Image (tube, rainbow, N blue to C red):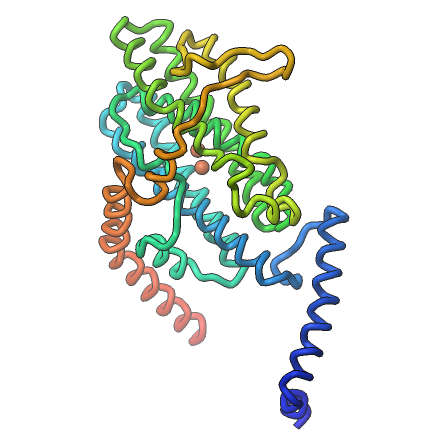
Length: 333
Ligand SMILES: [Fe+2]
Ligand SMILES: [Fe+2]
C-alpha cells in the first residue's frame, strides 16, 4: 500500500521529511506575505497564523454580538420614532457584523458552535468596552461617536489584513460603522445645540464616563502588547495600538469642539512639536480588571448571551428540521 508505506518509516525520518517540507511551505508563505499578497482559506498557512486569526476574528465576532446588549437596553426608551428606527438599524447591523465574522473565522476550520461554546464557557474574550453600563440616552449617542469611532480607527487597516476572507468582511463592516459613528454624533449634536441644560449635562456626563474606556479599546501600550509584533510581521495588524490611539485622540478632540463637550483629561493638549495631542495616563489597572471579568457588567452580559442561546434553541431545531425536510423533498423530486 502506497500511503501505508509512506507512513511506516522510522519516526525521526518521517519527522525530518515533514519538517523539511513544512520549512519550504513556510518560506513560500513568508515570501508571499512580504510581497503583500493575500492568503486565501485553502492556501497553506502556519498553524500559529491560523490560531492567531481564529482568536482575533472570533473575539471580534463576539464583540459585535455582545455589543448589541448595551444598546438593546435603550430601544424601548429611544426619545423619538426616528431615533428608535436608527438605533434598531444599527443594532441589526452589529448582529450582521457578528455573522460575517463568524463565517470568516469558520473558513479557518473552527465551527461557530465551538466559538460560541468558548464565549459562553468564559474562555473567549470580547471587547471590554461592552462591560460598561448605558445609564442615559446620551450614552447611546456617545457609544456611536466614540465606541464606533474607535472601532473604525481599529478596523479600517484590517481591510488590508493579509487573510483575505477577514479583509473582505471588514470592507463592508467599515462602511456600516461609519454610519454608526455619524448617527451617534448627530444625536449628541441635537442635544447640545437644541437641548436643555439638563440634556447638555447628560451628554457631558456620558462623555466623562466613556472617554477613558474608549481609549482602552486600542489595547495595551505597544511595549506590553504580547501578540502585536508577530501580527504586524504577518500583515494581520498594520498599525500599532499606540499609533491608532493617537490618531483617535487627534480626530475626536476636534469633533468635541464642534459638539461643545470637554474630555475628562486635564493633561489633554496640543503638542506643536509632535504634531499631536498629548494626553494623560490611562488607568491600565481598570482595563485589566475588566478584561479579567471584574467590570461592572461582565456577568450580566454573559448571562444575557447564554440565555438568548438557550431560549433560541427551538428556532435552531426548527430550522434544522425544515432543512432536512427540504433536502428529502429535493431528493424525491
Ligand atoms: Fe460593528
Ligand atoms: Fe458599529
